[in-house]
Length: 319
Length: 129
Image 1 (spheres, each protein chain N blue to C red):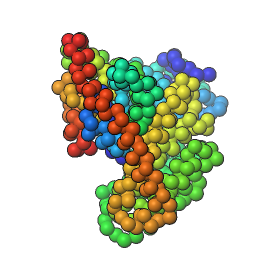
Image 2 (image 1 turned 60 degrees about the horizontal axis):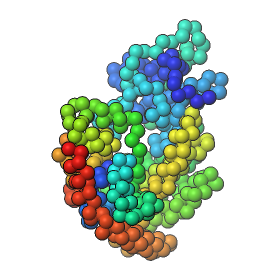
Image 3 (image 1 turned 30 degrees about the horizontal axis):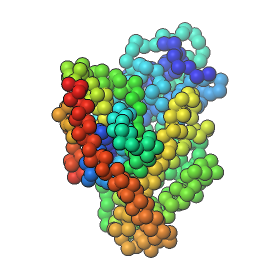
Image 4 (image 1 turned 90 degrees about the vertical axis):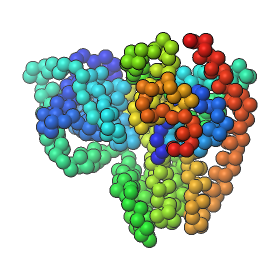
């Protein structure tokens, strides 16, 4: 049963508070959003089905993530140092019912997880632990590809064969386990993504930055679908799922535009890219789509050129 | 990926900005209030809602509702800057761009000072992003 209004001593409140307070006790600092998400994920997973903490979560861009707007209201997210986020508790500590086994076990397990994973250098182990139960093997395989791109950032040294040696193996491993059956609407996008990535990697260092951008764009497009899969979310109200579904069309339109933009940029940077099978077709299709889209946009020119005057008139009425 | 941007309605008046926006590959957010303004204007010029949404879809722009979290932000900035009566709309739009690395693209930078250096004109956006 979904709980929208939780009692202050609800088990989820106690679990959240425990993660935050234990991390502060041990390290002197609040947990990062990543740490908070992963510890709660493990607690939720390990204690189900006998103890349900009711965690509203989904598998998304950075693994198993809580859905913030559905979390207990005292949980606060701080973005003073983006992209790093920290998590705090803005209320009195929840009252823990005395001698209730579920509460004692959850608090104890939170303590042991925070002690284990809060030491420097252990967060990658925490992430790997969570990915070990991801619903689709593709997620962990793709994480390895993303990690390579993160490691290579800023290190675009012109070494021949760098891309194919380092990036091609994790890319191929990931695409080998792409869950086509579970995400049929991503099938064509996965295939064209794979073709273009091969093209960009053929250009080695020259194609690396575009390959990095493409890999993130594709991952995000996949994650928009992933979080809607029945095996990839829990304790999410139907209106939130409906909002995610309604946004899919525009998010995928954005991905398709970005993909075509990368295709056209790729065609400009290297002849080797165009020699990879399938890339030539992608370029032709991207050029045609861009031409049609820009025509549609310019068909609004006569009206939109005047919108400034309309807005100024509205503003003056307000004053 | 390029940083996400929030687009104010008045940015759409720039004929050079519109194709730039189409080509921009970061996330593009159009606050619901701006969607209403744009749609009232275009509807009064005879465009259908379907055509308006088709334009935004072609531009790759996401219409973002005004969530409760934005309300809390608009409340705080409205109180802090003592100009809510005149600029309530701007506080509500600015809330969508409150968290870095989001940036607001607008011609009306002077009324979004509460966003600090994360406000830019369409011309600056086209040069720098």
